[in-house]
Image (cartoon, rainbow, N blue to C red; front, side, top):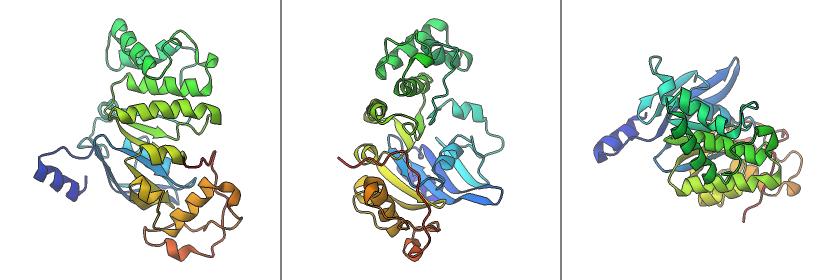
Length: 298
């Protein structure tokens, strides 16, 4: 946790940030993916992380629950340093729900069994209690009648909503979403986003990696734009999406919100390097930016 956040929490008598990421670096061999990330998420916030493919968004998310071990830096979750070698990471992960791009349901188990197996084996709940909680969460995601179905009988959007219900059944304090709609047909995206809007309205703390700009602008407390392993902009959606201050952010959003208008060679190829370096990237050779969708704003 940063010294500033600790001082604020002490001075106000309040709780520390739910997530506190301090100077996190992550490399895979010679490839430096994260280059000194500082980020905090307060209780009840919905923070959406946007940026081009390969910018480090998913790696950052996976560092929060130590699915990826940072090369250096610290990560705190609810005041516990998860990067401490002596931490009980399984105990911390029980407080974190995570929804991946792929649904990761057990294909040989029914929906009900997918929602109860971790409750019973990890939390030690009895079958009746686990099923009661599972039914409640299936109702929350609009699938109250699909408990006996197998994943293969569900659409992609339904499977992703089951995955959300499975995470909620573990009573998490916060939720991590890694591009939860990227594997879905466009017509199925809305149902998943509606569930996420409902969670935000209930006050769930959420860190969301997404390409859904409309969702980010409507639901997020803050939007973080990443490029080249650094945070380029961090602020209210009206600022970052509606009035971005950095040239790299503006170029990215113009291509995402109106991909048909983009010209080949328009996007700078060099990473941002730092929050203030966007202006130095003009004239670089542009790679193709990969997006599953580029939805417009309402």
